Image (cartoon, rainbow, N blue to C red; front, side, top):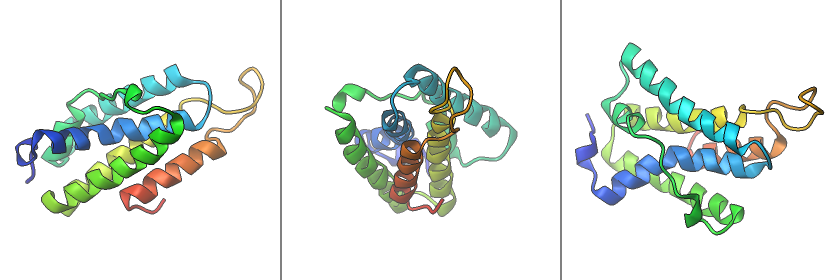
Length: 156
């Protein structure tokens, strides 16, 4: 069983930043809705904590979701930099976990990161007029989700 203590401070920070980075990549994919999407990121953490109490999740995931999502978006100079560096960070976080964690723990982490990104993508409709019509997930958001899934080593 892998725990926070198995990682140094930089490694743990990298793992903790994965879910909010994925959410920010989706937020940056489409203009508008930032507040609603950011709130959904927090709700994803809350729901994961609630679910962890009901089912037997890996302890590593419990430690990750018990931390509030923290990310300084100012560390990225532009949305393009967020996309390129963020995708790289996600790949590195998974690679790090693959060296220290069990496959179940890595899968749980991947699932949580993707759940955060999906929750953000579904936070508001894109297009339409006055709330009518539009799409649940825009093409740009879907592209971001696909890039996140690829970086995480999963197939959507």
